[in-house]
Length: 119
Image (cartoon, rainbow, N blue to C red; front, side):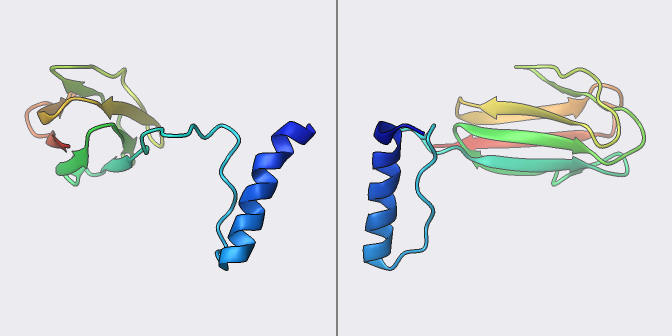
């Protein structure tokens, strides 16, 4: 670590120590003024999305995790995942506001969900 890289971390540690806070210093790749990253997970279990409907903020990364032994795929008007097996995941970032229904591409008749994106 160079002295230039160490200075901001040292200042953060000093400020945290003076304030009594126990927070860790910001990561080296954190950008000043960057939008916060939100994450939500939807599990696939017993041929159902849990929860079937979620409300998230714009910019949220939604990750579907397959807990079934059967492959599934997420299909929406905006995107389509590849099939993914047990213990695998698929993620999509919702940047636009609106309501986004989705289905399992393998079992569309009974596996349906919806993501509502708010400001």
